Structure formats: C-alpha cells, structure tokens
Amino acid sequence: MTSPAHVAIIMDGNGRWAKARGLPRVAGHRAGVEALRKTVRAAPQLGISYLTVYAFSSENWSRPKSEVSDLMGLLKLFIRRDLAELHQNGVRVRVVGDKASLQTDIRGLLEEAETLTANNDALTLVIAFNYGGRDEIVRTAQKLALAAVRGEISIDSISTESFAASLDTAGIPDPELVIRTSGELRLSNFLLWQAAYSELVFLPCYWPDFSQDHLADALRDFAGRERRFGGLAPREAAS
Ligand code: IPE
Ligand code: IPE
Ligand code: MG
View 1: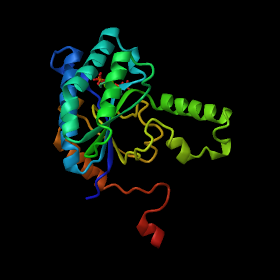
View 2 (view 1 turned 180 degrees about the horizontal axis):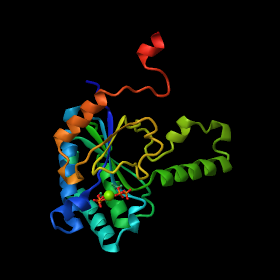
View 3 (view 1 turned 120 degrees about the vertical axis):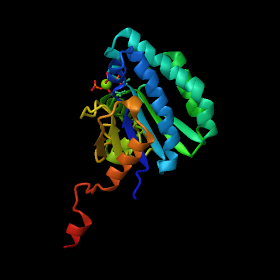
C-alpha cells in the first residue's frame, strides 16, 4: 500500500462533540488534545513521516474571548506536558503560522519545542497555530519583495520553487493527503499553497472521536486514489 509521507489534518468538531454531551466547548477542546496525542503516537507506525495539524486558524480570533483564551491555555499545557515525551519519542516539532503576533510566553514555548527537538527524525509534527494560508502567502510575498527591494534577489529568480522555499513550511514536502473531521466540506484557509494536489478525505466523526482506525481507513482510501497532477493516468498515457 502506498503510504503518504505527509498527512495534514483539520481537527474540527470539538465544539459539537461537547454540545452533544451537554458539556462546555472547552471540554471538547480538551478531548481534542487527547485525540491529538493518540494520533501522534500512531502516525510513525503507519509509515507517516510528517503530520501537520490545524490547531488554531488566523480566523479563530473572532471567537469569544474566553474560548480563545481556553485554546491558548491548552496549547501551552500541551507543550509543557508533552514536550518531554515527544522529544523522547524522536518527534521533531515545527510550528507554522504567524508567530510574531502571538503572546511572548506562547511564542517562547513554541520556540523552545522547535529548538529542543530540531535534530529528531522519527516524525515531524507540524503545528499550524495562528495559521492561515492566505496570511502565509502574503507574509511570504512581503519577505520576497523586501529581499528584491534590497537587491538581495532578482525578480526573475522568484519561482514556484523559491516561493515554496520561503513559506513557513520550507523544507516540508507537500501533504499527499488532507483529512478533515466533523463533516464540513471545506479547507477553511488551510495549506492553500501546499494542498494544490493533495487528496482530500472528509470524515463525519468529530475530532475527539478520531482514532487510529479512522486514520488507517483514510490511508486505505488514499491508496486507492489515482493521482494525475494534470497529466494522464499511466495506462492512458501508454495507449
Ligand atoms: C476545532 O473544533 C478546533 C478549533 C477550531 C480550534 P471547533 O471548535 O471548530 O468545533 P466545532 O466546529 O464548533 O464543532
Ligand atoms: C478550522 O476549523 C480551523 C481549525 C480546525 C483549527 P473552523 O471550525 O475554524 O472552520 P470553519 O469556521 O468551520 O470554516
Ligand atoms: Mg469548527
């Protein structure tokens, strides 16, 4: 079975999971962190080298202040509680998103996680936090425009390859597979550049209910897909 090297997940449905149980939304987010832990543990065994998770979008700031603060608190707790285990298991942590506009304590924790685990290679866990695909593309365009104005690069040298190498995800291969839980059928500003040719799998289950079996099923689904990248399937190309 062809396993994707990079799986990206839109972890959606925490609020509805909680509501269905008569619990506050934060209980859903807490259960979501548990599902994330299990998924990180399962990924290397399933042949995954890169796992990207959408944890907080650049649009999630529009939620009530108390929920935003719950989500920030849970990220901090996750790093504090899980960093040692992640490191012990050889997990490299990378963070994508606009780090510059985060609170300094959160930024510090994220940077600590990235530095501590920089040489690990069992799995790269990419946390998309304060992340928006459009925001990432605009920040990248600004970076390249500045370099051009300073004469450090020529306009002609800007290519799809050099652009990709300046994104937050520089050095990370594009995800072959993007999974979204909770039944919503959209990308919600996730990896707009990188998911250009990703296979998409939408699952009805809410994120806190996501298990290793769901992941294995999604990988099986992926293995049966025919990826053409704008060309022809090998069998058609040969005839
Ligand atoms: C996903 O769950 C987690 C984040 C967006 C941070 P939601 O909080 O979006 O849950 P629903 O979609 O309201 O059920
Ligand atoms: C996407 O989910 C963001 C994350 C999972 C972090 P949302 O719940 O924010 O997306 P919409 O609002 O349903 O599009
Ligand atoms: Mg949602």
